[in-house]
Amino acid sequence: MAFKTIMVQLDVDGIAAPRISMAWDLAQRHDADLIGFCAAEPHFVIPTDTDDQAATKALWCQVEEIECRLNGLREQFLSTVNGSNRASWRGEIGNPTRQLAMNARAADLIVTGSPTVDLVVDHHRTLDTAGLILAAGRPILVASETYAPIKAESILIGWNDTREAQRAVVDAMPPDHGQGCRHRHRGQ
Image 1 (spheres, one colour):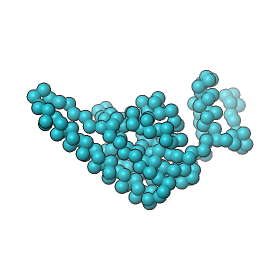
Image 2 (cartoon, one colour):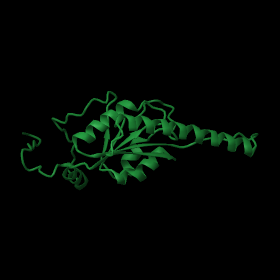
Image 3 (cartoon, one colour):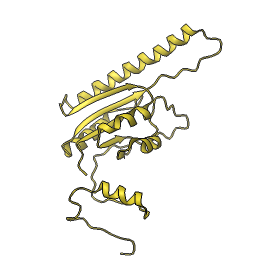
Image 4 (cartoon, one colour):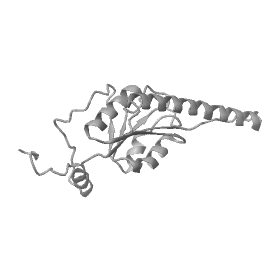
């Protein structure tokens, strides 16, 4: 499969540089464009004794904090890609998983990081990887925590003999999959 555009998802509160670098390296190796993406939404639980003005002010403070963080991530992204015209940025106010799923149609591959194993996850500020897999309609690469450059020398396909699995494997194969590709079947 040829990738013309890769989208890298960043966490509004996470460390971005290693993921950006890994995705930029992948985009350059595939001669693809890279889109940096981040989204977060304000979330405020209104206590019963709070007036509307105080609640509105608290919500706008969260929006301003998110916008400030998105601007910082944008600058970090553009700095990492050296201002290349093959890279662009999308920062959104909204649920990270829903916003990324809606923007996914702009890319051939989405790169994200390992899901958070913390028991208290704020889905207003972090991606729900399982939800994204179901909603995006695009291949998703969940990068390891080390963000080492990808060397796909051997590929393992988890298989069940269903129409969906067959379609997924065929869609993932490069256009020249008939030449030089070794197929191993169970029992060989």
